[in-house]
Image 1 (cartoon, rainbow, N blue to C red):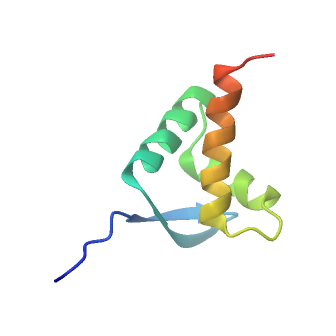
Image 2 (image 1 turned 30 degrees about the horizontal axis):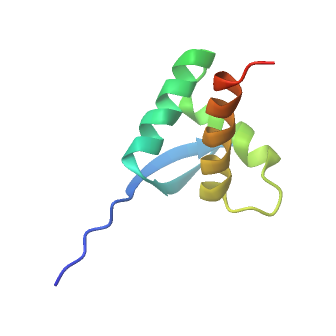
Length: 77
C-alpha cells in the first residue's frame, strides 16, 4: 500500500534564501489569499513569519500565522 502525502511542497524565498515548505493545499490557498488581501507577495509574508517565529519550525509558524490572521479578521476589535 502506497500512501500519498496530502502535503504540497513549494519553494519560497525567505529573507533572500530559497527554501522548501510543505503545507496542506488549503493552507497554500489561505496564504495566497492573505498575500492578496495585504497586497504583498507570498515571499514577503513568509519572510515576516520567519523573522517572528522564534524557535518554532517555519511550517508550524506559518500554520499559526494563518489561523491568527483569520481569527483577527473574524473578530475585529
